[in-house]
Amino acid sequence: MRPENTSRYIYRVDADDIICYVDPHMVSFAKENGAPHLTLNALVGQPLFGFIAGLETRHLSEVLMERVREYQRVVEVPFRCDAPAYRRFMRLRISPLADSGLQFES
Image (tube, rainbow, N blue to C red; front, side, top):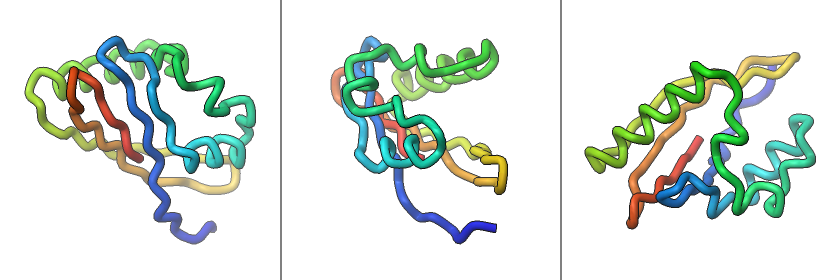
């Protein structure tokens, strides 16, 4: 079992759901978990939905993002982000930003 990690992973999208910011901690997390190709240059400027697999996950993401923008309220969703050797219990926080952008924090 792995010790609890209290790091925060943040990224932001603009009104068109284009990734406009990625926290360096998130890039490190991707690298440590077998996705070294997910660099700042590979992420920033790309559509968010190009990185979301599965119709159900994509639909849920679209609905949550729409609600945050419509009601200008933070939404928090618990989720699991497992690896072969351990389970990670995380929480996704989606916050509204100016000009219909969104911030995602795990």
